[in-house]
Length: 101
Length: 343
Image 1: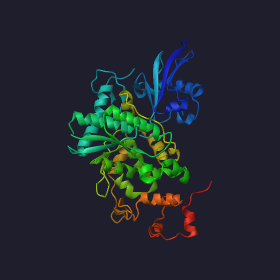
Image 2: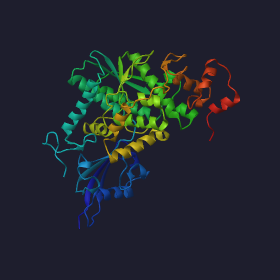
Image 3: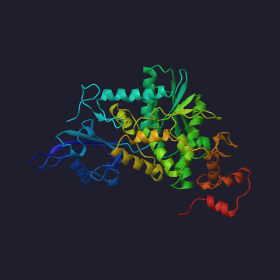
Image 4: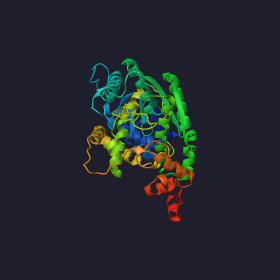
């Protein structure tokens, strides 16, 4: 049985608008037998935090193309993307690039 | 576990570059990003020493990064340029007024002079007023046309030699796709040019130093450097045609990241068969701005707005332009074609 883990989430680049405009969220993921991975985190976020328009955040199993994900300040593509297993006190940032420049 | 930086091999990598697939640490990424913009500028000979350059600034991610990098490279490589910020106020409540606050902060952060030109003072119409007349579709046409001229007017007021805009690789690739989808061969040929040719009354040459920079890297550069930018979608943009091209491009990028540069490359290497009819550049008979028709698009759109015929600039009504120029009255049928659609 894995212990519950604390995750620090940040939303930026306009993504925060889907979460009541709140950029920073400290969340505790409940304990479960398998370790938490990013795929499950996305499902959890959709179920528990996403306030509106889920299609603007997730597409299929992953994030909508155009949303960048950083885990502990590193591109999630380097960390295994959806397969990355979350650890206690990890910092996950979602930045939307889908707006004018 | 994260990889090591493929350049310095010392620090841990923080991003995977979509262009090359390399993993880079923060410092190597900053260096690579800045160096590539520098190479783009030098290879295309975008500027000459002693020139004054207006940086088109909206407070958004691209123009903020552009201003930051231009200032940095100007100092690092002694370009000898005098830099200024030009901003356009389209009069979009809740969007532009907020982003202009960001530009004013940028002005202080980068210590550059700033000029703001507004649609209200130039045309007598804010975008809010235009949308009320035109509706939620096709309003981007007005904004884009007016903004182009507004930037030129601002540049002339500031007496700059050149303008540079923050258009990035994604933008250029989207434009190529849009022009293919619409069959606009004339624009397709011009849209990948990194700088415009400079003839015409009141037209200031402009260029795109970030033309080969991926949007993803621009966002990450701004994030890691903690640059201050404004990030909300224009409230009138959801129905813009560009949105379709953007969604498609993003899906392509997720499959094969080099697609964006590849599309630009295809656009650049397009050649048109002889004998294909192309528009000829002339001047507007009313205001003297550059135009391929008798009346420039800006004059046509304004005429339509001022006469309550907002569809005048949308779609092909070239034959009616002559009538309008000579102040002849339109028939009922012609007027109906140009009036706004009632929902």
